[in-house]
Image (cartoon, rainbow, N blue to C red; front, side):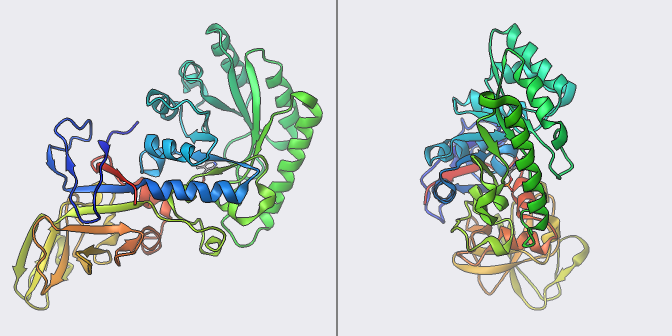
Length: 403
Ligand SMILES: *Cc1c(COP(=O)(O)O)cnc(C)c1O
């Protein structure tokens, strides 16, 4: 799944990690890395443990879709399992197969449904658990499993008001009956997804929760002792907002990586952002007053000043909407990103300071060195932390460490 190279290195916060000539993927040449994503697996472990404690006796399903929200699915999955997560979730069969190929044998739920295009044979062979929303899909899974002499675990998804995927609540018991009658299918779970759990007003969450309760009860009446053992409803926001939503398992994505779905949920649990976006200064010049910086001359120097160029741009996911708004921490000081962010590069103005070529800049991080946080970048650019981290591109190697 990862197209970027990755390896575990022991780095101090300012050391430039070196890619090895043998590092796989990413297209990154051997030698000093120019820009990279640093992932603190200690933070992932601590965040996982915080949720495990908060929601027990419910279990934690670690959501590692989209390459672990840009952090690297395999590494995050391993650490989350070590820290007490009991189940993994991905968006697609391919993402699940990639985890299996890396030797991960924990249960893995595929959250998405691919219709006729879903490679069910691969799903079955990899021993993944499938989301089922129709009888037809359940039959195809059953056939794929039987022809291989295997069984497949499925979770029935009920649409209680997200309007995206799932059987409607009044048909849940009927579908559960159909699914449970298929010989190679094990109906292990029933679940739904909340649309507004990050909203301080929980009235729509209450409506969805009531629909889910009724759907679960109808499934349990229909199946008796064969009823699914894992009932789950909450994402990160749901798990934080109310203990009533936790059922047997919670599906935690954003929180694992150290972000809160909304400011009002910050007091429920202490989380540490795991990610830093880093770049090593590639060029440093003193420019006279009146010099334009970058496309469109949206920044013009007002005095003689130092401009440091960083080899990272919007093609790496450092969004152009942070032009003239971003900031970077270099050597314990904080400088503004000036001018437009280019595809592969951007500039910071360091004034009378002249950081050496190779000095390491932190453009996004927990904020402990004054760098911009992911939350702040999301706010400034009209999006959510999910989008900021998942946009960080495959050209950036992921470098793993534990603080
Ligand atoms: C992505 C996803 C989650 C995780 O959501 P977070 O807000 O990141 O915790 C949970 N459930 C489903 C169905 C999802 O698609």
